Length: 109
Image (tube, rainbow, N blue to C red; front, side, top):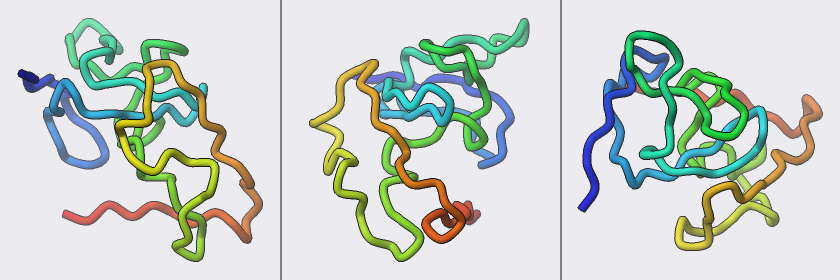
């Protein structure tokens, strides 16, 4: 049974995540679960990548499938299709970062 993890203030306005939620780091491009998040500072809020230490949910740390589509809404072929394909530490490169292929992720309330 999964538990809720306090992640504190972030750009998405979410203060907790399910410990089994799969995440992806923009810097090291690795997948991991919420329960692997590390504390970014003395506050105890867990928003740091366990592999490279970058932090910020919604800034550097994303839900695993937030970047799975290109600018036109097409699923990237190299991106896992479902979370059952994921392993902690598995790396998946973002791919083509040219302005024609990247769209801005907009978070809605």
